[in-house]
Length: 237
Image 1: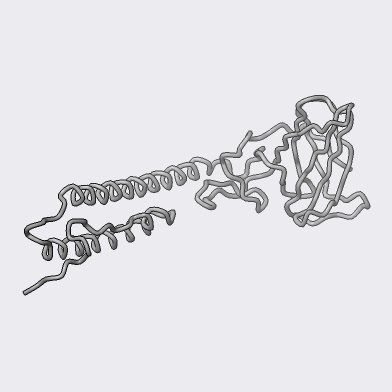
Image 2: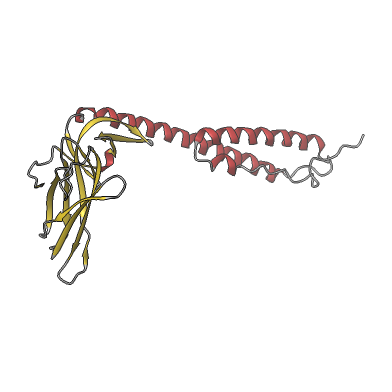
């Protein structure tokens, strides 16, 4: 009886692609794809061995390379899975450790602060003295609700907005952002750094990161600057 090889060249082991198992971003999906490909590989390998020409057996180098390749991919997937578990445990530990900060005022890196009880607090820093500084507060839709002049000296400055627009309207509680527009005596722009201040209402995990909830704003714990910052602020009237 004549048997037909699985491939046109009985000396070359069929190659099963493994890129799909490692490019989807999750260890579980990669492991499933790898298992499927590996089972297919074993099926083809067995069929190839059964149908190879006894006078011209399979290339042992190709056979070994395929097995080594699949073994390396399997080890990499297991490593990635273990790393993900370690990251999850670290994130959970950070969340638990930050629980005592609930109810505390924190300063965090970012220009968006909550307006609560008629107060939104910011800290901006100028790297050098400015000739002109303007402070602009915008709502969640990017609409300008308040503007005033700011400090022109180099260094850190506090600013508290009382929630009232330039026309005297009281804005509702929510998230508001501060922009600092500064320039030197030759009209060259000066880039200011901005921090915000708020009270932590809860801690949790968002998008895989340990976060503070500050007035409904999710603040990654990596952006924490200080706890209980100074209350020496200048309130905008």
